[in-house]
Length: 426
Ligand code: GDP
Ligand code: IMO
Ligand code: MG
Image 1 (cartoon, rainbow, N blue to C red):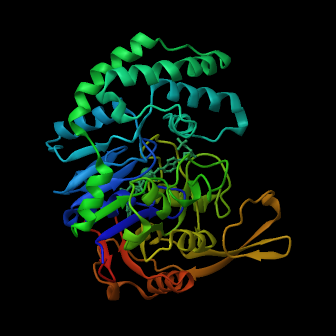
Image 2 (cartoon, helix red, strand yellow):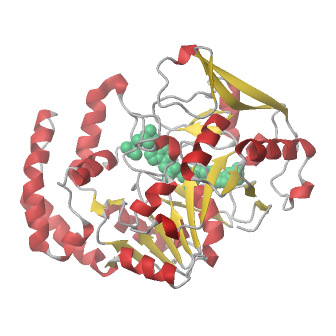
Image 3 (cartoon, rainbow, N blue to C red):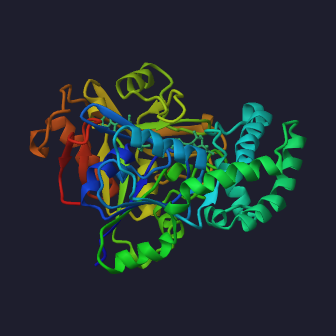
């Protein structure tokens, strides 16, 4: 059996993936990001020291193994260099960081097109992070993209840029935005290429050999199922596949080689940006969750929308990812609540849905079926053993586990890497 682990978000992101991956990272030979870009914000907290990673794999803080930005990721090189610089200033050695030559580059025009498109959509905007993610993936799929590996031969880079820039400037002109100059961009990237060329490798081959060699490899998902381009709340989604399936496409590793699939699930739900959110609490409950859970975007600082745990989405996530384990996070945030609710179904036009439908046209017609639990009203953030948890808390956990028919292997009860309860070896 291979020692491979996929870690994915099961809701709308920010479930605590960064923390969990950091906790697992000392045992890993490879941590590989497989999709998304610097729209992610993955937080690692160690001895009150906080690191927010946008592009770098979350193993970068505590793993002795290699950290790889995989083929399916889109890379803003300015952001990458800034992150590397910031971590080096904090005393980290980043000689173990590599990028697959197949990863696409987020160019400055992608960022401007992202912003211009959002602006022109007005109240129909997606609420993107404005990091150029969507336009970069558009170019990749439409075969107009530029890949990291193209920087290794500046003649190829120039050719790719010349072909694509004309089209990008046409788009920017239509939005009444400034155009980009070929020479200026070429010169900028000629300099940038020197700074990263030692990190550019054929990671796809290396990861596959490492797996065959029984090395421990973790595939790090950014975002989450409900932001997935196919299975999320389209069009209010990101432009990649943050599901377990995406991990194989985004790294060139066969599904045959994936062993465990860990779904990170927050004990309640949050969402940043626009789009449907059935269990959202736009009331004092939502405010409490936001304040106690510090639910403000790690990337953009935007307040996160908050609501109850939704097991309709939980079932959908378990099914689509084929989860082998669940890691339940931020359970401590519920410590002070008298009553805690969990959605177990949506009733739409007299039909009950227990997994997420492809679209919900009119939310006024949706009745959420909740199951209510008594709170435990006790601080659990220092508990290390499952048996020491309050009875009501265990009931909440056991209900989730049974309802989803998937073991909860680990529970996170605080932001620090030491605040965990293990139920089962991962
Ligand atoms: P990610 O995008 O999935 O990596 O999650 P983020 O880092 O964006 O957001 C999770 C936030 O919750 C961060 O501020 C973490 O430090 C914090 N966090 C993670 N796990 C826990 C937990 O179990 N309890 C509490 N209170 N905070 C947590
Ligand atoms: P992590 O990895 C939460 C959301 C944006 C927006 C939508 C599309 O930290 O969980 P994009 O810039 O990707 O085109 O924006 O997706 N979004 C996230 N929300 N956590 C994230 O990442 C997100 N990455 C993108 O807010 O609604
Ligand atoms: Mg995040």
